[in-house]
Length: 460
Image (cartoon, rainbow, N blue to C red; front, side, top):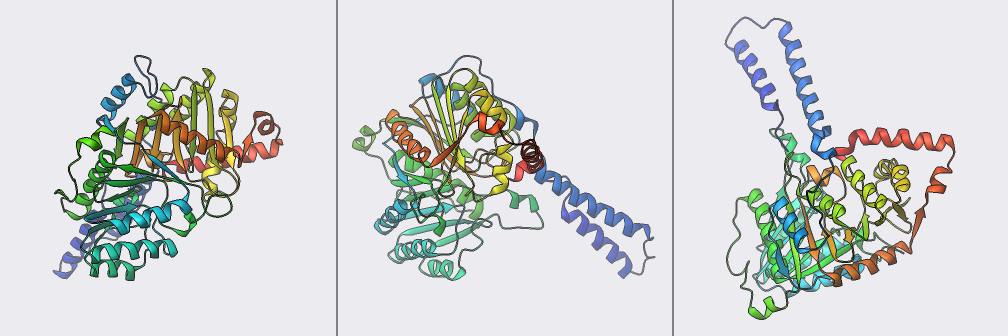
């Protein structure tokens, strides 16, 4: 985010200057000076509010391509790589992990097996049983000499127990807090570390949507949120490591280096790399929005099928236009989002405002019934998949640090389609006839509510 045009320090300097004048025996300021100071303070507050709510023009524009592309094809990969300035790499097979009940034991086993390093960051980190188990494993690792680094977001991890942080530090682990609030730079607090990135020994990594909190300790049907994580190996884990190192350096000033962090990759490991991937590491600005560009190019390059599941879907108008264009062209577009069990009703209110246009375009919309669905996936043509932390909203595009991987791998896409179909079986489809069959009062209320909520789209 760009810095504000008027800083809190400006108001502070003016106030201190007036105090110095009075202290030195100079003639007191005219009464009008107090009015001026209050006016400057009001301007400061107004600018802060505008920074929080303002959406750059680019956020509303669809993406156009000079030549047809096919999702996952070599031409597509090259175009995306050049567009977002990220390399095309090769990686080993990705292992999907469906829901927190499966992820917790896999994660704890990996942490307990660590021999050299653990680098760990996740946006939500809430006090509870899951947090206790993870901190215990991290502290055990640090006690046996493993280099442990944990980056906790100041907002997402505000309930993280201080005693557990202290115990980890006492064992030799390093803990840093990302973007704590500062009156000297209040806009910094609006930019969050929304990444989920865990790397063990520089060889095994995890990314996805699951955070450290007890709401994830379930199967997503009978208990807990429905979500996914993905286990990756070697080159893909190394790429996650590099992304962590960048944010860690920004936060602490430490450059992470050496063979314990980036162990050499053997020829046998390279031979197992069967997929192609592009790692999208997003620290966005008004002019650089790689997450949005990745999603839009993927949507615009689908030719047969496009399946999207997202827990916090509030797409900007340009994204909506491209989804509708895809459906109108004959592509089978399905979108799965939270239903009444959503964690954030306000997001669902905003999303409902788009139902009419999407359904008329031919998009099939499903709402997940049992619990909150928090998964973030895009699957195009059974070949190309996007996995990671980003939501389909302006905050992920414009404000948050995010971490996603686009992967060209039919086997992975097929596995993700199976998860998608399983989740559809626990969902309700919203049909055009049912949506248009609502009462006039209900339609009007839904539209007004959606338009009001969208005034704050940047912060949703």
